[in-house]
Length: 188
Length: 286
Image 1 (cartoon, helix red, strand yellow):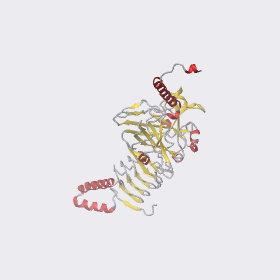
Image 2 (cartoon, one colour):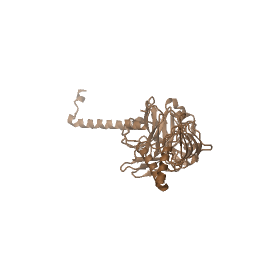
Image 3 (spheres, chains in turn orange, purple):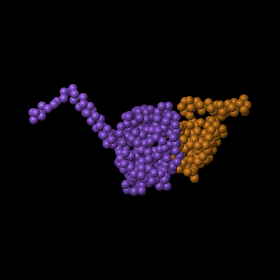
Image 4 (tube, chains in turn cyan, green):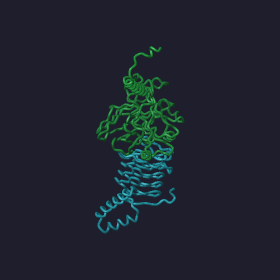
């Protein structure tokens, strides 16, 4: 599953290196302050474009990721199945409806992070930090293969979802119900 | 004999209306009596449900579902607690339970099983029960029903709703009404054990109103969940509410999809999904 894992290393927003290089050129051209503003705006534009296209969040499937910071970001719908994620700060971000199946976490900060309806089945969370301070763990999915940090109070999350369910209804915002597909088999 | 036949006779135009009126009264009386005696004749005003799951007419928040599986008459007990807000402008929500409850548990079953609900019948006689300090709610007087009555749940058949609910092929989603408020059943095998009561502090929720009760055992709705024959063992193992059962086992027999508010016309006013059942959510916690 992770044989052809990509690598993604950065120190600010988790962009591919080409984009970072381009940003660096822009920064040199127009000055550090303007560059900083542009960086933020570009980041927003990228995210908004993804949301507008119905594909919010990051695409990290089978990717090695390290040294990235996402403070208070809207990262809903991130796909990171089989990813290896190290030294990443998700503090205050919204990762709801994300897919982290079989992902491995090392020194990853989940303080204040919304993990509503995040799929952690088969994931190794033993290196996760501040998971107990996550903002929302409703409908968090895990199974018997999920490894939690030592001392984590598993009673705060529902489940485990060790089941043959095809799908799961969930809600991450009041009055809104969504359907998560859990397997390839079709419902009705 | 002939003389008797020649007795005074009323013209047809005189007695016909009276006979017709008497017959009509007889038919009406029969219907009323039959309705009172036949537990399955408690009518719903609708045969199917319409609407959408993401309705904002009635909002259900902070939904909790107990990890409890045991019960009586081949049924599990399910207790839920939530905050409910009526955002409609013209619809009143009936909060107390019973056959015509607006508060329902939405459960899907394999089509090989047709659920029939056996709920306490407060109309057939009750006796007082004092719940002990360790009860939920604690130190509270409720009524134990002497009899049960059968209630036919409504199947959700509207294609759009079936799709929204993600009901799997060969399964059907049903609306199970909440038990009547303040009514329990005694466990015939354990004289000091009773089922959980629905405990709701008000009968109707007016437009613009919210209801929530954070006290232990109050603001709770209790449902009896009929179990398919192969799963009835879940209900009979013990009356203690918490066992080690989890969704992996229960999913084979039924799936609890959520809590729905459905009015007298079959309109889905509000819905909230529930997470998979877990041992961690004890009925004695709320």
